[in-house]
Amino acid sequence: QVQLVESGGGLVQAGGSLRLSCAASGRTFSTYAMGWFRQAPGKEREFVAAIRWSGGSTYYADSVKGRFTISRDNAKNTVYLQMNSLKPEDTAVYYCAGVSTVVAGKGPGEFDYWGQGTQVTVSS
Image (cartoon, rainbow, N blue to C red; front, side):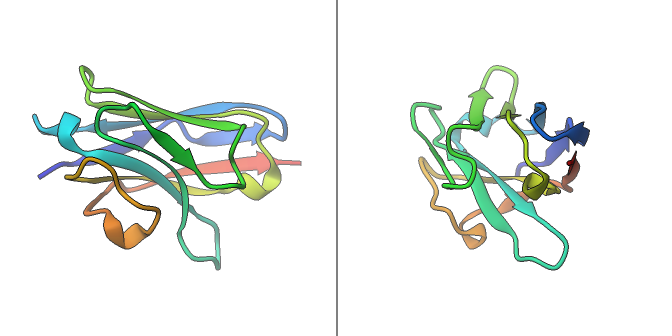
């Protein structure tokens, strides 16, 4: 069982940056693939980025590629999402997710554990 707690959200102007963190409990964090998703009001939850358990491979949604970077520190049981060049359309609640596998896909249903979410608001 893994518990996930996100932090780092907030209000930022367009073009600015934020770094989200997701702290995980449990000794087996390093064996979990991790991902970030987001959900804007009235929209479905969508994939943002994911990283395999070793951190050696990452993948992104086309809408954030080149602007966002996912990383992890298994010694700290933490996964990060560095968000640069933020746009108003990035406004959403961002969720951290994990699954006990080497690498996960892009569907929310492929992840077993979820954090409570952190709000990111980008003003124009």
